[in-house]
Length: 337
Image (cartoon, rainbow, N blue to C red):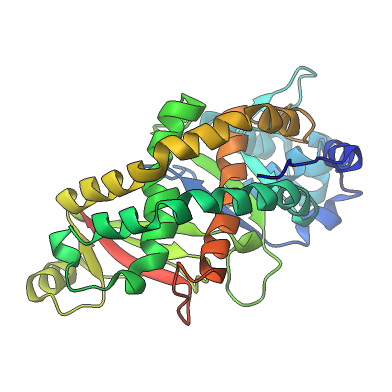
């Protein structure tokens, strides 16, 4: 594997990234993404009361007076907003006594810098899945409820989501990060605000994400990078009927199937961990030279950096034909308790 080289100029650019004024920041479109194994999301609605905008401005070190002035916000109102964010665990005080986000915020410039290294790593990492491809297909063929579904039809879901993303994340947390999502309010989740410059409903920076909606005893999931809104909406009764009649394009994933997915993920887990461990010094160096080192934790930074890595891994697997590309890079499924 070739050596990954980091240009000093890139590191300095990352560390010095800034915005000139509030209008420059707020004219861009940012989308909220969370990662949590139990589908946790913020208790507060970041799309309301300028909470998302305040997070963005704190990331760029705008002072409270400037923020209040821009929104024509009274001190008492601003304090309530800050308390909401602080109570949710999305901001903290830095060594200078100013509030900064504890989540990850990635604008277009910062995203390009992250991708510069993450893409190289992700391309290298694709070799792990390629080396284990036949073993992965064999393990998939032994899942009874998927017997009638050719591997090619679900290759994006298996190689993208099961192997590297949702079903792999808990092993990354346990064995590499050696920690779980931060406690935020009454939940545990990682959160990022990602600038989206795309005009075709695709995910920010081309990331492959999971979106979930819990409905009764079901959780409807959607995985991909070509989203056109939230996961499909159903009532619990409709899902009961669809499961009973088995006439839906939705794939229902039982608890037993989910355990088998974990077994598939484990086929590459040790090789993946070895790869990540070899690159730990690089990850630490990148983090310490980034705009995030004085804001969010290494574990949260790494979780989102890893998302950039596996986006490239997934795209390489598409390019090489291991994942069969569909008209839309989306897969809908239903997790059952």
